[in-house]
Image 1: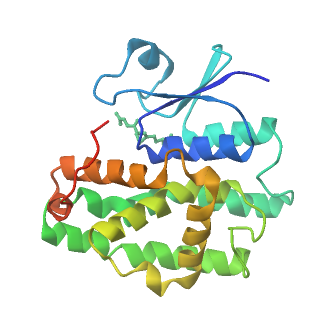
Image 2: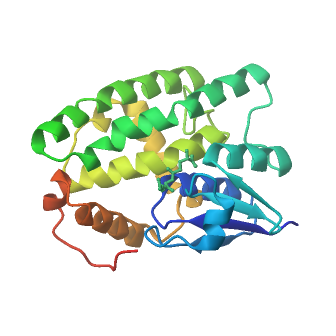
Image 3: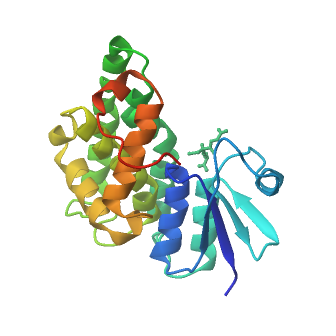
Amino acid sequence: MAKYLLVSFKTCPWVQRAAIVLREKNIEFEFRHIDRDNRPDWFLAISPHKKVPVMSIDGKVSLFESNAIAEYLDETIAPRLHPDDPVQRAINRAWTDYVPTFSDMVTGQAYADDEAEYKADVAKIPQAFEKLEGALKAQSPQGPFFNGAKYSLVDAAYAPFLQRYVFLDRIKPLGVIEKFPRVKAWTEALLKRPSTHSFPEAEFEQLYRLNVKLRKKYLSQFIADVAVAAE
Ligand SMILES: N[C@@H](CCC(=O)N[C@@H](CS)C(=O)NCC(=O)O)C(=O)O
């Protein structure tokens, strides 16, 4: 088996997506966390956009962009997480293409400078959840995952952002996901899935909260506890 090295910032959701796919496929990998503010030269040499994730294979080739990494792993290592049916595969890919927009709409409020901006950002969340609610109704009437019982790359792509929505909802209640029962049930199923988690859940939530606090944005004032060291 090839040697996989996944280069990461500890709380990066895009790294988490790649890590989820590795775990779903039972692939052993080295998880190497680097400092966002002091990116080593060896990393800069293999990451064209200076971003994580980068996945190095046998120290010979380095892949970047979480979607490209996920697709590569799915093409090369069983079990296949893409559906066999080409139409279904195209639908799944279309929904993973929506992830960057979804993440901005659902977690963008964490970067708001003031209350007015925060409220405007929160007002965008229902539009994103509504689209997903419709997609889940069409693709997965019974749940629990995007394609029903079979876990797919769509699940791996959304899990990190749905998890962050839950974290943000616990910092300052948003009251949105409750209106979208399929999205809510999907989120719960993804959070229960062991592959979602790169770190113990409570520890990771604390780390996330600390990052939000240290960002010194509008939301920071609602976080009282800073129990773990920043990374
Ligand atoms: N489209 C990229 C996004 C990766 C990304 O934005 N990574 C962030 C960390 S979560 C990063 O490395 N940011 C550093 C920077 O922008 O300088 C992917 O899917 O892999």
